[in-house]
Image (tube, rainbow, N blue to C red):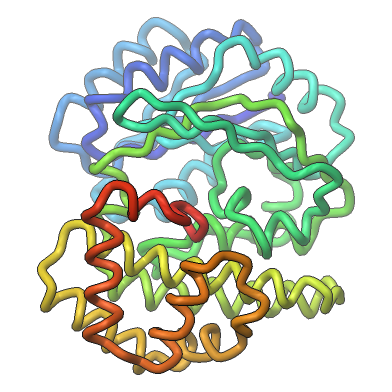
Length: 335
């Protein structure tokens, strides 16, 4: 078996069929698709059964609701492919790019091949996401958001099994970013491809939008700590400034996201939590205003560094509510 595609899902009936159709478009018998039903209560399981009955490459595993990490781990345990490929149930592959995926897997040259993708917004707008020219793996991991997710990557299964790599089931968010860092620490050969192979759907029902901000902040502590460890393993201190700047954008994106659908008192409370969180404070303190390239980031740095909760809450509420203001610097941090 060449590729095992692992798709966890929970109540994903709105988008699941489109996702599975994009997988079925692949004609290779050397592909299997493992579907993990995380206790869905809608028609998702029935949709999957229609695929398993029509195509023996699709396999459905049902379990009680225990989260996406447990689902992916169960997929790993049942996969047989030389490479593993994770896909979320609300995203879908570009069917015309299957040849690129299969060719990379068949060549077997790289332990890890990461592809570009398209952001697909509810408005229908599409944005291309590709790796910067001559980008190294360490920079992609630490200074961009492009490897914050596990989907869109071919992982050599042997490395996962031999090193007992699994998704952290205690994390509600950031679990895939941590997994990718753990895997990257064991990689010898890799490729960051400019081929865009899938559509990442950005919508209100996405997990990052559903998650509790306090949970996100707690999970970010784990991610920031793992990034620091990888930086030391990699031994390139020149990346520290970029990593620190990107981590700062993670925090500001969390505030902006929170402000978009919460009352002012709740935004104030999150500002207080961030102000009292030692990891978040360390990220803020490590930045220098002269190193922040955009004017709005300098403003955010000043109000966060001074811990002005009312001003901070008002600023991010304004940024989330006024369309022209919201466009300034959006999407720089963790997805």
